[in-house]
Every structure is written in structure tokens, then in C-alpha cells.
Length: 302
Image (cartoon, rainbow, N blue to C red; front, side, top):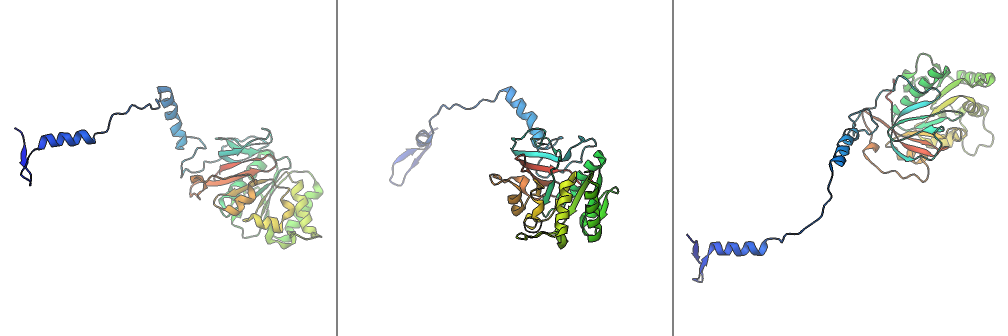
């Protein structure tokens, strides 16, 4: 039965007819469009990629809070291995110089190349120290640690390492290495700027005998690791070591050290990786000699 009503002006209206009229005026016309069609093959490939992107497998494509995995039991002889490459920015060097590839282990063959490690996250030098210890053990080299007696990283030193905590002991050990000249030492220097005798401030015309001793010992060791919290300290107090250590490893979240570690042409795109993590040791790797650099997840210290 029709539904009518009387308006204020006394006219009679049909509710159903008015509803049809409003609907006809407001309805959008149909438009034909063309969209992308994902075939079964593409969908299958995307489904196989998702677990790796989420970091659920043995992969370097880590999710936001993925933990750093332990170092493998078997590592290549003659190489120092740090961890997993997450994002490779530049790779133009020969493969035998050092290895830094997406979703692969980050390693290099020393051959007179040494490491400068910076940053406030002590897990970074701790992981590098363990990498140097693994290399020394596999190659049958002696491991020497030079640092202050109360340095927090001392607890990670393996029993096979020889630790020198006094100025006299450090002088004697470095002099002995130079006298023997067998290139059989792996040296780790933790905050050597604290010993002013070994520093060589910029502008110094005549470096001290101890500063020259430190430089020569680093140059003639099989592998040396120099750790300072700030790269600026190395530049101002230990400049003799900069040219000897083209490999720089620095913790994320430290813009000053990142600028010093990476090439001038490097452009960092901030991601979740660049946030300090509780379960992952995130760092940047740069080899200025081979022009390789990228983001890495270091192995958890042993």
C-alpha cells in the first residue's frame, strides 16, 4: 500500500517515490579499471620469502628484536669472521680482499690489515675481541691483551691470552715482539689513550719512543684490534694508528663515530636496524682499502 504524507504547505507526497529519486541522483556511475594480477608463481615466491624477511630461519634478514646467533663451530682458516651482513651498500673489491655480501658472513683476511673499533656499546668490542681470539686459536697465534687492570672487557679474555695491565709490562711485550719479528702475534689494545706515554697528539713534531713503539708493534703484528669509545680520541691522541687500521667497526646509534667510520660518500638510510637493541649487536663495518661497507649483526660474545 503506498505510503503518503501531507507537507506543511498542504501538498501530498509519496515517500517511496522520493526515496527512489534521491537514490538515483547520488549513486556513483560504474567505472571500468585495470589492476595488477598476481599469478600463482609470484604468490608462491612471496610466501617463501616472508619467513626469511621475518627472521624465523637461519638468515641475516632479521626481525626487529631478533637475537644475534652464536658463531659457527667451524670457520674458514686465515679469515677473521664477525657476523652476518644485513644490508650491503657498496661492493666493488675483489672477492679475496674481504667478504661482505647480503645475507652472508662478514670476514676478511688480515694480510697486514688491522681493525679500529669504536662506540659506546661495549658488546661491539666484546664481539670483535672474541673474533680475534677465534682467529688466533685457529691459526696457532699468540693472543695479547693490552689494557688497564680494571677494564670491563677483561672478563671475556680467554685463558690462552696474555694480559698486560702495567706500562712497564706493555713496553716489554711490544719490544719483545719487535725483536722476535716472527709476525705471530694477535694484539688487542683497549683504550690505550689512557696511557699518555703511548699517545701522539696532533701537531707533535717529535713523537715519544713509546708512541713509535706502539705504531711499529701494530704494523708488524699479524692482526691488531684497537678499541676506543670515540674515534675523535684516536684522531687526536693516536693518529699514528689510523692509517694502519682501515677496517672500522662501530656501534649503531653513535652518529659521530659513524661519520668517522664510513666513507664521505656514504648515505645512511635509517631503519629499525639503526636503533639500539637488547638482543642484537648491531654495528657498521667499513673497509676503506676495499671500499666495502655495510650493516652487520655481530656474533654474541662467547
